[in-house]
Length: 399
Image (cartoon, rainbow, N blue to C red; front, side, top):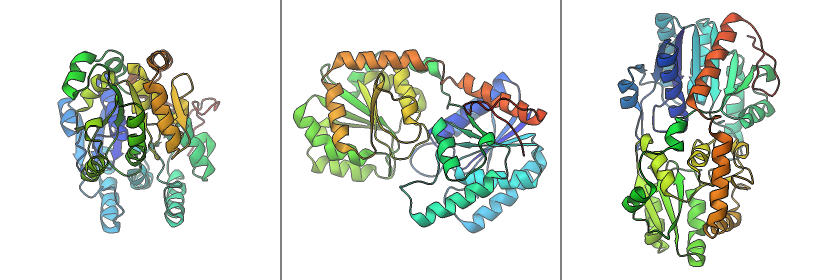
């Protein structure tokens, strides 16, 4: 097949890793002619361009395809996307993230691309946005949904929330869980003891990792709000923050102000290939983010055998169940503190939850499974056929 994927930024992030793994799978396993069109990687999060190059993938950089709303640049990006589609003649265009999804679907629809697919990695609307922004986003997403043939959610919650907002039709939706290199998490390359020594963790420290950009809505503020209490009740608790972002300096200042410098370890930006060994080195993961599709770190932690603590947002409840971790109401900081202390004081419970997570999700989140399901979707769309609708993992396709 001739396929084009479109995304705004190829930074180190869940949506971007998901997209790149899909492109890699289509290129290497199915020998498809795949082009990835992306905007510039702005910010301190790092990017995936070197990995794409090492894999021999075709990547086209479009400077006008930026994440913020910029009318002039957006219009130029739309026109350039139409030009690219005329040149590449794709049978399938697959867009990712809201901005690229709106511009990419408009351009591919106007160029009469045979199959147009959009993935919702996380909705741009919700209680964290102003009413005016929510109205704008809903209107744009409804408009764009009429210009594609299928909408993929990385969890069932994405379809449920989008349909509740009147975005698209039920028969357009399909759930395809975000894929990853599951074997790397099931068998990390370096020993737990070696990585713990590098992090400065003692044998009796109980480390809770947070893997996320140092950015708004990712939950770091909530951890800081309860950290002093947690450490006072269990001085062996350590917080390991993996990632970088524009709020790093502010968080460092807050940690020092609270007198908790010895209780926090900030690794900064790390290559994606180090995430499995870092998760193996800690004892649990805490991810109090307020805005996700299905955070990749949740299944990643469980594959390594580490329990998770998460807010009940979007698709978290699809992997965080009582047998695998602790699920909390958003912004329940008291519950956050209690959950951390509960796991910190019970190594047997941590081991049982981690083992159950590995058992349940080892196959569900393999990138090979994700690519196979997406490739099957493309085939059905191009054939004009249909599958039973069922639980949204089947699809009835239509323009």
